[in-house]
Image 1 (tube, helix red, strand yellow):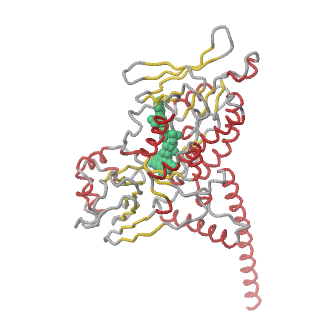
Image 2: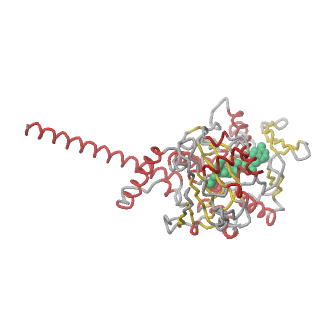
Image 3: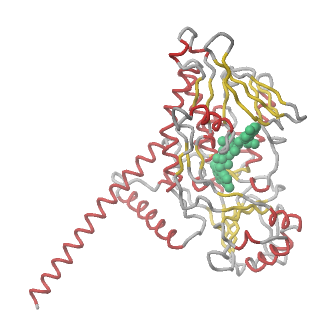
Length: 479
Ligand SMILES: Cc1cc2nc3c(=O)[nH]c(=O)nc-3n(C[C@H](O)[C@H](O)[C@H](O)COP(=O)(O)OP(=O)(O)OC[C@H]3O[C@@H](n4cnc5c(N)ncnc54)[C@H](O)[C@@H]3O)c2cc1C
């Protein structure tokens, strides 16, 4: 985005070894929806994205029960006016962006792999009040290289060193770079990803094989909170790419206690009698899975500081504000949550899109554009985290009662929004898919419906009480 705006000398620091570096426990599939496509449209990349993805309009889901019976259904299209979304693995998406740099922006962007940012300083320039930035980077050959950027973009994920540095710098005056936590019913669930071969056999006879573009929900036979398990497999365009099955459970589930490949094989064979487990999970993969720590879904969280300018306005009036160096934060570095609503990547891409708008509106002057970006994006950031907390946290079969209550609420809102659309809004999960609505607008709509439901509920309750009271009076009179 910066290169397209005409910026030059852009350096991307990435601690991983390559753009398509494969991490089994991070082999997520993303759905790039209309919100994320604001960014791919801006770069003219949406056609290329569609070529390497499975479109949401062709999303087929096959459910396989423990007895081997299966049913394939097409996911109903919630809103025919909605932009087609595209499913692809994280690795393929990152590679798409990297190839774009290689092909079109090499003269402006240098990407350094195996380059880990280890320290960020602000330094007063000799005999002036002006400060500049110093970024220290550990490189592949063990040396430390220093950069002095005019703009530092912190899109380095949940454990962002950029945000943590700002937190330290800002500590005496505020806590705006501190993440504020909003626990949800899916936060702290543990996950691991089991890698399966492409087109793996679905039955022991080996006659039926998985199709890459089809999603699978393979139900297990074991029952009970600590034993029940199912495999969720998302679709892929590339038929030669391994499939990843997500296992998501409470931290005290039995599957996390399995110590080696044999224990895993025994557990999976009991859990999935319909699958030829030893044919589809290689001994190496079984061992890797058993030894892997996996990960935990993060608690929904955000921070309210999205930028930092090095020269406070009043401290250096003689220096034009346009020369202030600045730091801006994007993506998981400022908002992070479990994958329930599929917005991690889409919101990160929308952050970039909004930053572009802020730069456009202020002639690329950091002293104006970074505060503008923060004021445009912070209300959405907060709303996004509240939505992540409530929109669909019960989808991982954690608890039947919680799931039931959530579904009643969901279908009630859906039904009422269809019957009385001028009073009730559809559930948040549906509204999020409308990329023309901001997260803030969606949150306001959801809250409004919640209020209306409370008022209606209270009226109904009092009406019911009045009826009961009247009936009991009649009963006394009758006696
Ligand atoms: C289990 C799970 C499933 C998910 N599923 C989905 C989903 O289905 N849909 C969805 O939209 N989102 C999903 N997400 C969320 C999504 O992955 C993130 O929201 C998204 O990756 C955020 O992008 P980012 O660029 O801000 O951060 P990241 O993707 O974390 O990227 C940060 C990058 O910075 C690099 N880096 C970090 N520190 C340094 C350093 N000091 N020096 C150099 N480089 C550094 C990292 O190596 C990394 O490449 C999921 C997340 C999890 C945990």
